Length: 124
Image (cartoon, rainbow, N blue to C red):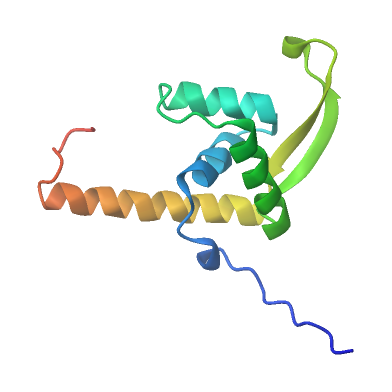
């Protein structure tokens, strides 16, 4: 039986990210979080414009875990949510690199839109 060759995952090969995926990575930049905290932060940061349901969130987290962008963190009780044990997720070094590249890609797109006067020079 022949062994399958694994192709190396490069940050560039992960781009462009789906909007929900980028929101999850952005949430994990400053600390590890459990699923419900990720959903809450995304909703708050986007003023409710992005609402991640459990299916979207956990499907994306599964793909992020498989691609090595996120890893499981600790499992602990969350005082805000009572005594329930929560599974936490955190960015890997690769995940941080991908998030940075995606932010730069999006920034370049916004700058191009401003140059074309598609949007104003002030933040939208």
